[in-house]
Image (tube, rainbow, N blue to C red):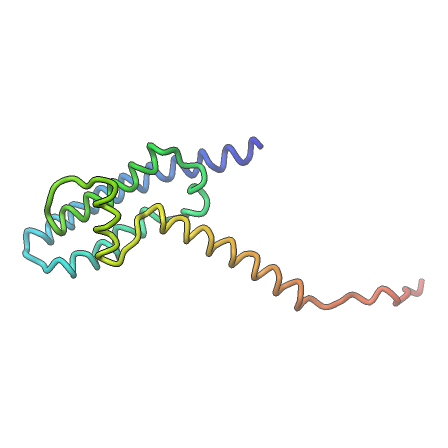
Amino acid sequence: MASMFLLILGGIIMLIIFTKKANSRLHFLRQLKRAAVPCEDMLLFYIAVIRPVMECAAPVWHTGLTAELAESIESIQKRALRIIFGGNSFTISSYHSFCDSLAISSLHDRRDKLSIDFFRNIFTRQAISIISSPIKDTTTKYIN
């Protein structure tokens, strides 16, 4: 129990570090906006450079997030989308519909998918290693 708590606490501390790192990268997105880079290219920059920071080790800390921390993470994507496409703040429904129109997922949905894929991969590897492991011959007797 205590080790699980420490694991989640460590994940939350790392999450705070990742959030600061992603926020600092939004500066580069603003620079691209000032340079009149097309919105599609800025979106690709966000997907390739900023979003992976927010998803780093997500299967570890995702389940331990409070609603406040989850919203803090989501706000980074919302800010990035406002920088890229302009506009005011999003309501919950307008944010999800905007993400759908861009064919990108909310960060919460991506963390869910990453966690499911991660654990599915673990179980698949374990099943393969169990199936492919040689069966020990227990009938052989050792001679002293």
